[in-house]
Image (cartoon, rainbow, N blue to C red):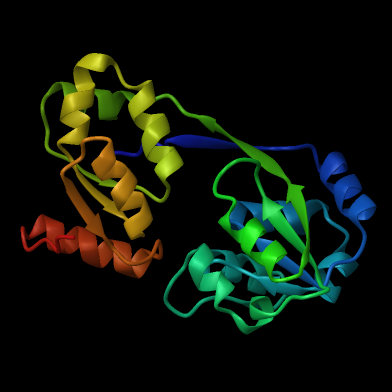
Length: 224
């Protein structure tokens, strides 16, 4: 296994996070974008702000971080994505509610726009930023050797950042890899960039990702 994160997550200072929550005031609902967002909020946000709001997680990883801190959160049962969260009862009719989106700048605007259209007062709470990470030496060595890879990706931004960081001579080999991604949206963006072999796992959770990776390894690969 080769580890090469496509994006580094850089937290803002705890003091700034604490002030941002205090200035924003109370919330009816807080929606966390990732386990890292939950960890930062738990570390720096006023505890009473978290306890008074209904908490929403995109998947089991974020839910576990919150639960381990003694906070209950709801999450989608199967579709661990923006679309899955929008089907949750707490977000179906948020008219008049103050909803905080806890995460990082950039990325999709679908959740913010959909909640605004449903009548929520949406406030962004950016606790960290994403910056492109340099490809690891083991990844560069594998691509240089022409090794056929199965690449696990959780976001389209990560895929684009990784390819942009590769030397031009290795990009064709990169695009010839098999990409395991959690959603059809990410798969479509990869195909538009020239990737041919994409497996949609149906979620970013470990269980489905491992199942898809095993299927690929046995050459019994689910195709999209």
